[in-house]
Length: 164
Image (tube, rainbow, N blue to C red; front, side):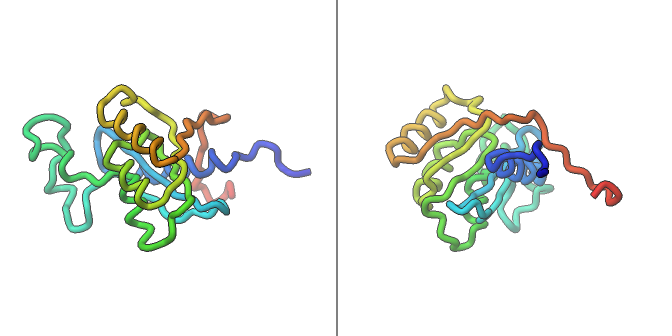
């Protein structure tokens, strides 16, 4: 008899996105993304961080202050990183899994890359101008928006060799 308590595809791919977020060095917000094709194959992952060549020890992580002294002009969001990390793969018709609803800048990249569905966990900035603009563009472009309701609260990864 097969095992019954396995995770579904949405939980698996959101789990990959959440695992990718653990690579982020942002002290306040860690976001990961996972792009999947129509055959449930992972095309790319990404997380929020600075561009290649920009040391995370030399650029600011602050959330307030003068614009140039904050992280905002420098950080590449998880969604854009995942799109860029796909390095030329065809993303048309794919899904992107992301913990936090995409901002308006990421929405543009999602639309332009041909991604057709955004699966997200949190919409905590739902009432901000950027998120409202994002939703307007994504809907106008025919991108499906799905807030995920997982059937599990947590997925535990175990690195102990003897438990494998």
